[in-house]
Length: 347
Length: 158
Image (cartoon, rainbow over all chains, first blue to last red; front, side, top):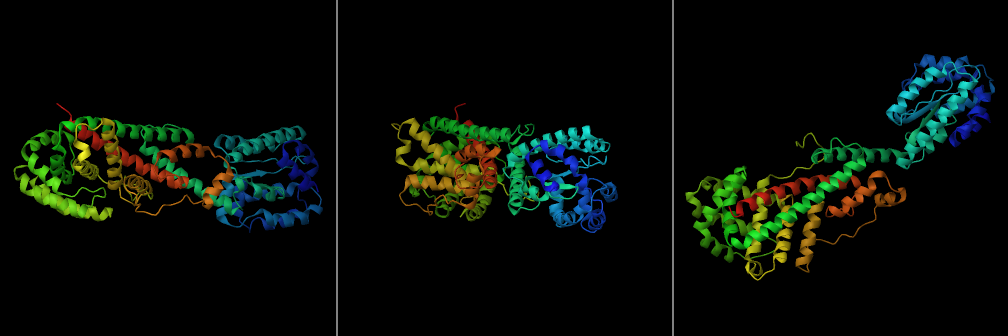
């Protein structure tokens, strides 16, 4: 039948649009009434969103055709297919739908196709319906070309999501207004899941963008990801660099780290880990408490698993005796209480 | 970053927690006899310190709550003892992975693979989860770098 032939052709690519001229049969002449009755009650809002036209205007378009009534019944049945009643799906379909109507010979609008695959193409497409108002045969062909190009564009966009719009083929049998859900949007549960997943990924991508300096300006996910990878690699290299430096520094200060650890706890709990002040303080403490700490450290059982409970609290207890002369005195007391909480957090 | 705003939970502790853990790790290293002896090669020491840094970072960042830290600790434990504390998790072929292989390559999958190699424990994760882990990992790494920088600056000869 003409309809199916035409739609089949459309899914193929631009050529058969010309044959569509015979179609105007689409125009629902007699079937228009039923169609009209169908339209408003059934998700009129969604439908108009799809159409981007006020419902009355759409109905008028339908009406103005003068075609055979034979199409009526088919349209009727097809019409039921065309309107997904789920508002959510409608919303999504409105975002990604292609609406094409083709009534060439009667000089009716017919050729509106709107794809929302990208914003600029959106704008092009929205202007086109205005143009198609006065279309004639030549315009039809132009339109078909445009439609063809848009199909190709859509296909390119679609390929990026790897989901063929199976549902679009179903929708292609629409009467008059062809609602096409790109990327399998409206009907496929798989596509819904895919969309949800994609949104999740985009949300996290934004999060990562904020984290990595200089990623805000970059457009496109691939480049942003490259930037993120570079950042991670640079951080890892920095860790390696610093550990090398630490290793070279270490032999010079045998027990210093112990003391630093001891004194560090206090200042840490202070919350202000200001490197400058600490750096000055460390060497001093080193002199004072070197040997005693060394002894203490030896007493503790070295283990890879670092049982914090056994290890740290005794250390702190001893530290309190030691560092009375320091500013960190009060902080030590606080630190001892804080540490068990930390341990619980970890374990 | 307020966790209230961001449903994706990627808070890391303050710098002091990282410093604390790192210093504890280092002091532990210190007690090992092999470490302080002068005839030790620098590269070994470097490796040990590096490992200490990563492990302490993993512990500071939330122990076993995070996938990457879990995997890090797992690796460290594996190298040290034969007894593996956690069950070895085989890389399960989840339905997500099957879909991934079937679908072909989306734009981000290529980069996601590289990310998986970089972030510890990234092998079995879905892409969205991977990104969460990456965000947390980046935060923790930068904290650790700051801590180590302060330490080195403090200890380096004036």
